[in-house]
Amino acid sequence: MAAIYLIRHGQASFGKADYDQLSDKGIAQSELLGKYWQSQSTPEKIYAGDLLRHGQTLEHFLLGYQSKEPSVTLHSGFNEFNHVDLLACYDARWNNFARMAVTVGKQPGANKIFQKEFAQALERWTCGKNDSDYKESWPQFQTRCITSLKDVINQELSVKNKQKNKRTKDICIFTSGGVIAVIIQHILGLSNEKALVVNQQLRNTSVTKLLCSGDSLNIDYLNNYGHLTLEGADWVTFR
Image (cartoon, rainbow, N blue to C red; front, side):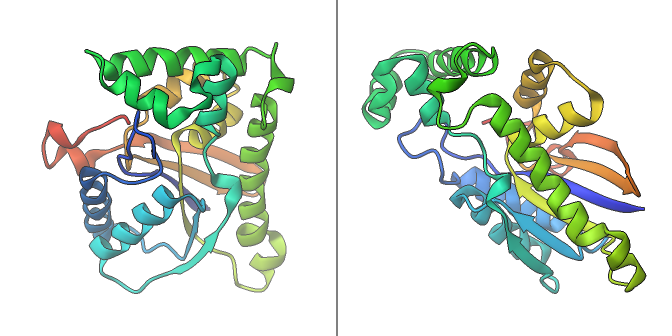
């Protein structure tokens, strides 16, 4: 039986003009996860989305891990959905994302305002009535996430590799909350609404462990962020 660890990136710059950049806390969170992993099974293979926040999370994870670096493969299939496109389709004012982010950022309760806008944009995207508006529709995103996971399973855990004694036992995938939520939805047969709830609950640098054996894929645990709670509640972030 093989383990696949889905790792959400560290805290990025939610609500800023450039979200795809880890904050100082996000960098520290990633290093804390790496230190925590010193007591875990050594990952034999690492996959990561090719967004900046994925690479930065992996980089600082490895700094904290301080051990022999496993083989790393970038896989754009594990990239998050395009939140800028979602917001622009929801409200034309978001076509100039940088300017709108600055405008919202100046208002009292800016984070709550942005969260509300983003939640409404997500609901519009997933409702199934506006698929043609988006660069990548919700069904297309779902298909991409599941296909990417199957790519990894076929590449690393196939019967052919097992026969050659090359079957990988522990795989880490550095990705984003939306991707993890869709994979959980697929395994548990959740509704779109429940998948969005899962997405909202995933903490930065949280770990979700899947167990894979033959054609069987199950969840061992979901959204584990114990490495953060050991440092204090202030380290636990959602965005």
